[in-house]
Every structure is written in structure tokens, then in C-alpha cells.
Length: 546
Image 1 (cartoon, helix red, strand yellow):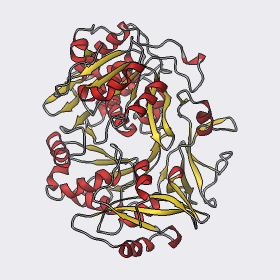
Image 2 (spheres, one colour; image 1 turned 90 degrees about the vertical axis):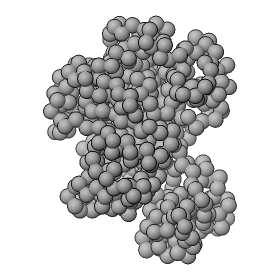
Image 3 (cartoon, rainbow, N blue to C red; image 1 turned 60 degrees about the vertical axis):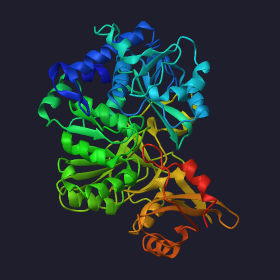
Image 4 (cartoon, rainbow, N blue to C red; image 1 turned 135 degrees about the vertical axis):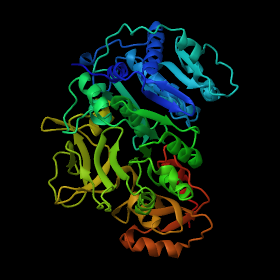
């Protein structure tokens, strides 16, 4: 039986129509309303010819036979409607980073070639310079957001257009081969669209497996689980344009849960976040590393009651320091903190659980059933207890490839003995007991004096100093070492840690050759909107370190 993201949402909506699907402030959209609104959007897209034009069997892994829909919004109900409505029209929605400058946006649109752009009014000036590069028949849908921006030329008001479209079931038959696309950047260079079959994406990323680890075979199984499981309110704090945020929201729909959106969606506002968690009794919270965890912990210490509904804090995309975990679990001792290793190209590959049983997690990760560790030249799997580092990989449900990029697809998705793998770029050790020791992303590796140094390891060592609020480690050119380690440090409020203090603390946790050769102290560290390291910014600032 073919199962798509839209099929699952509609099946659960038919069974639980009055359950809230999306909540933001005083706006509450039920599952039945979500079905109605996303059908209308799908029919609007279809009326403009935006749908599938070629089936998967006729395409290479890096090719798409469907029209693409750009989504340029902060977290809001319309973002999730745009995703679901596009899927129901057999179109492919994709994320647009709202921090892009004109050149980056033009590159993205040139690669994805959108047939529609759904955007919030606040981004009209961001879009205006690239409109001339889009075909005249591209559909522009402008979402009102309280700003006073006028409609762009050719644009339609989103709410008006959707509300006047048909609410009938779209006259297309979606396929499990239809595409889920997530553009990813940073570690892949220029942004690249990761293409998943929806069936594989559901299995790998959207809670598409049962407790026994087997794929959910029918829509009735998804519905039965939604009835059987405790209904949870789920809050993805990062942007939906980030893979973890988007997939957490879609997972909630595939499980019959409710997606909670903070009232302040364009930045991390800890007061609003904590108030939303308390008001909506959020059970599961998604965060991205210390960039979210540290300010949330500082605010929660002043109002610990705000977190008491939490049963799980899911962390993905960046490391959450042990001290931050301990502080959060002290406030919410009944919760679990789940750290996940993975990428847009792989989905979760390993996890580490802290709390619930009252014990701290080991420094290693539990490996997912379909994860593996490959040797240096990516020709074979390594056995537990191997020497040196390996590549964290995954087999089974993996993406098709990168849109329009056969070379990068071949590099990232090797086939070994007839089995296809994905290798996102993390360097690890598979220990003798079968657990995983994470060292860092290869693209964030610094080659200094013939030694490989993982930036994440150095960052975690420095963060153990109590006077450090945040730190980013990068490399810069060095005549003596080839590259040298540079630490950009944001001191805690009112603190003035010295270079010597930080070196002494770090030396307790990592080898001396990994210690920074230079430091730069700054009032604030710039990160991406998801909380991940802004590598370009860090490299640009590294020259100022001494």
C-alpha cells in the first residue's frame, strides 16, 4: 500500500477531526481544518498546473519530475499548510533560509527552479531583486503577517486565494515515490536539495516505525497508534526551515500530536518560549544545542514551574553540554534528554539518553539498527573496536541523492557490495561494546601539525569552564602548523575569563596539541537561525584572534 505524508495526515484527521493539529497563541487549527485548508491550497496549485510531470522510475536519483514550491517564512501555521498542501498536489515544497542575501537566494532559485513561492509579507524586499530571474508564470502567494508590505507584482494574497479554492479532495493520486526535499548548506558547500522518497522519509524521519522497529504497513496502523498513544503537545523551537524543526512538526502530524508554535517565531525569546511551554503543557521540546539550552536554562531557573510538563527534551544538530543537561534535569527530574546524531541526508543514526532513570548518560551513543561505520575510503564496514576513526553511515532507508548534482550524489551515497549507504560526514569510533564515540564533522576538522583536531571536541572542553557562555572553534592558516586552532569565546554575563583560565580547563579534557593557539573574546557569537555554527562568520573573525 502506498503511504504518503498527506495520506497519513488525512487518515488521522478523519479519525480525530476535532483534535488540535496546530496551536499558535490563540489560533487553534484542528485536524479537520488542516485537511480542509491544505486541500484548498493543493487545488490552487493544481489550477496553476503545479504538480508531478514524470514518475520516479524514469528518473535518476538526483532528478525531480515534480514542480517545486519555495517556502520563505518564519514558523507559522501557513508554513505547515504550505508543506502539506504541496504534497497533496504532488508538488515538492522546499525550505528557503530567510537570512540569505540576494546572491544566495538567486543561486537557490536557480537550482530549485520553483513554480510557486509562498512567503510572508515581511520578506517582500528580500524577494524583489530576484523576481526578474523567475518565469512570468511562477505563482506568488503572500502571507499576511501584520507588516504593512504591499503585494508584490503578480502576487496573490494567500488567505484570499486559499479560502476561495475548492475544498474537494485533489484530483491527483499521490505516490510513495513523491519527493520530500530539504535544502542543506554549510557542510555541503553551496545549498543542496536532499531528495527523499516520501515513503523512505516517513520511515527514517517521521515516526514511521512501530515499537518493534518495523515499518508501519498501512494507514490504519498510523490511525490505531494515534488512538493508542498518549496525545502530546510538541514544540519545535528551531525554525521549520531547519531539517529537525520541519521533521519534528511532520512527525507530530504522523502521530496525531499537536504542533505548538511560540508566539515569537522569528528569534529565540526565552520568556515567550517558557510561557508557551507552560500554557500549552508541552510534553516534547526540540532544541539545537547550547545555543538554545543555555539561555533556556538561565531563564527557567527563575521560573522552574514553566518546564514541569516536559517529559522529553530532544536535542539535534549541535552538542548540548553536560552542565546544561544537568541543569535542565535538576529542574525537571522526570524528563529525558535525547541527543541525536544525524543529518538531513540520513535522519537519526545514533542517540544518547540522559535522565529518566536518574543516571547520567555514558559519553557514547547507541547506534541505530540501520547505522554503520565505514573505513576511510568508504569501501567496507568497520567492526566494533576498530583502530582510528571511521565514517558514520546509514543503510536501508536513505535519500535518492542531491538535486541536480550527480557527482556529489555519488560521493555521499556510495554502494558497497550491492548495498547503498549515505555518509553525511561525521567522524566516529565504534567501540568494542557496540556503542558510538562521536568526534565531529569532517568539514569542521582542523589539520594542525599533521594532527586532525575536531572543533566540537575543543568547544566542549572550553565550555566546561563556568565563565563561558558560548564558544565556537575554527581553524586559520599558520606558517608553522599549516592550520591552527582558534577559539572565539562569549564570556558569561559579568565574567572575564582569561586565556590561561580557559587553557587550563581545556587541558583537563583534551590533549595539549588540540588546545587553541589563539583566542578572541566577543560580547556575542553569531550562529545560524537554527543555532548551528555559522562557519563562514567564525572563519572571518578568526584573523582577529591573538
